[in-house]
Image 1 (tube, rainbow, N blue to C red):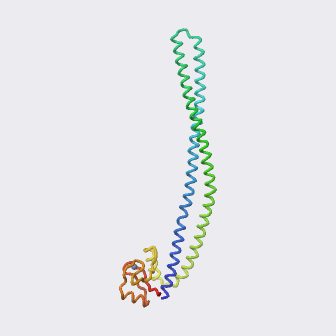
Image 2 (cartoon, protein in one colour):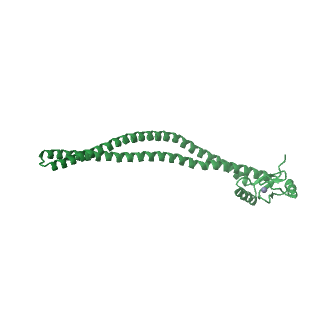
Image 3 (cartoon, protein in one colour):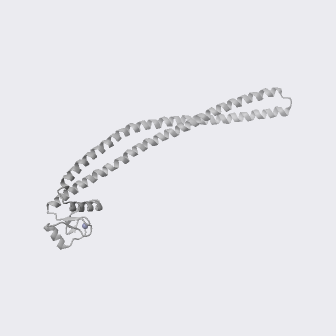
Length: 234
Ligand SMILES: [Zn+2]
């Protein structure tokens, strides 16, 4: 039956196109993933740079605070020479002691901050290197993926043309029936009988229908899944 052969050819092409399309559809996601990974690295650098900026501000603040404390300490020490009572003297000493303590605390924090700054700076360098490496690597990958999209588009266009050439030779209602089954079944719409069963859904086909299908006078479908059945000569 010539029409079955035509349908099988169209089906072969449709299956090939859907495979091409499935691959085609994965590519935007792959491109997006590459972009997201680069963005993550960029954000990591930005975050570290922001922290670095904050620490540098804190270091400057600590410097000016220490400067002020130095001045006050100096002033108190001069006052020490001029005091008249023991009470005033010990009050000044307490003040000076408290200033020393504050300066020590500032110093301790500054040492910690310096360590952290070094740590962050080397972290930034490391992440930037990683980012550069990733960018040059992903550029190659992006080009490959874009090339693959183009190749798939071309292949699909060729297959589509082949399909159109065959489809015009099939009656419109039959073609529509085929397409409807194809859409609802997502794989094949035309299947061979296999030991008296539909090879699409494995339901047993009544004997009389098997005989009719074998005769091949008209197209018959499976009662269960609706697929178009044909007899395969062995
Ligand atoms: Zn069936």
